[in-house]
Length: 581
Image (cartoon, rainbow, N blue to C red; front, side, top):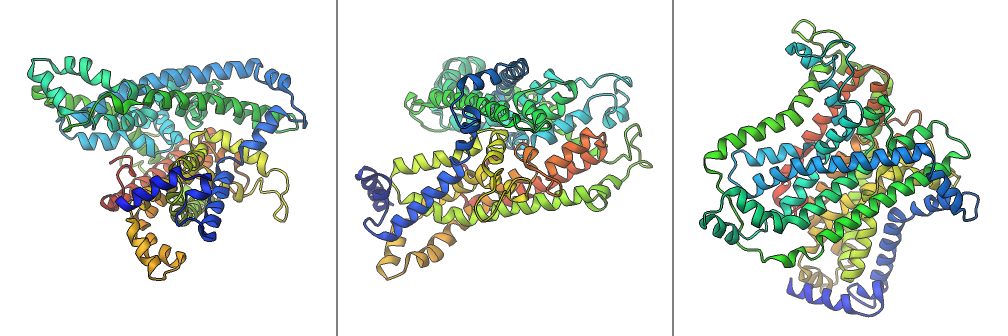
């Protein structure tokens, strides 16, 4: 490992940039490999941005900034922009209110069942936003099966309180609280325990210790977590689509979706301009997050992990935590399940009325839903397989590049994942709408969705494999090379076996993320190429909520099963690969 570190340091300072930062230097093979990796990452990370910028700023082939600004100054755009910023800001604040206490409780205290609570809190991060929105829709309102069973449903005709601005903010807070939790937990586990123990020994209460020691040290992490929650809310489509469209409360992503229905010659520049606006807001939020996290490690020296004893408050705080988890996650999930078991709205759920007909309809009988399950499984599985296979050689090449070059390329690979899916979808439409040489147009085909998935989820597959490859001792590869093994043989016999668990974990993460996503496929699907997210949204819009609930429950079951499968690999994976561990 020391040899590997010294070689990496030398390559990082070697002149000649990317091509001289690889080992062994001076050979044609590694240079050709790094060129392929650079080309692939640029194609998947930056290529979609070009037609998006051109369509927004120069729709007629000439730069037209005045037209771009006029399109963004329309009343509908200004109103949607305000709604986007408004819901994202207050949603981020609510995410902090939820995520900060849970992060402190799980990372620093002896709260009972804290690991289980932390795992459950991360569920919204794994489950698609439209499923979260659907579960809350079926929990509240006069048609709620669960509330009618308990006899506390609102009177018939009462508007569903979750629809509109308030509901969007509430679910943004719930959906993105796991982002705050993960970010803060990463900082809290490194806090020096000596400082906290000294404060407690001096007679400081738990709250005073938190306010005078923990909170000041965690300010950069809190600011970064808030920025990430804000950015995630800006590009969220599933929640505003299900909760905002029925009340005509539009955010920028749902405004783009509405404009897609009037597709014409003047719509593409408008959608491209809105996508650029969303992208700029996202990049601004990411810049704030990066600035807030800069230099945080220099604020304190990590020592023995900190632990705060809650004493007599352990049980009451545990009860309060479980009550919060029950209200945010378990009751909406139960409402979704009960709705999926009734034949139609208005029928009370009893032993006599309970039925699995909705599951039979969406899993067996209904052609569109059966096709959606097949399409989502094939597209998500295909993207996961391609990225898992390609991630290993890509990570090997990146590991042999200079540290600066590696960071730049990994940052480019993260761009499609960091930007909202609706922006990526518009970019893919602009990129593949016109016929390409030899293959023609990919628009209105399943191929465009697959390529969008490859772009968006590349970093999910690459990160765990890159971490695993970085831990492989360099002397293994050098010993095989000195014995005459070819580069391909070394990859197949050394790197592939050692990186295989990380590659499988990355593939499962990609599959989980792509299986029931809606943000990307909402604009890219076509007849015969529907995905589960699109069908679920369409069924709910059509008033077939019981069937939509059955699809949502089925997708939750698949995701939870995959999480359990990933846990089997947990001990063989680099730290940080699984967000719930």
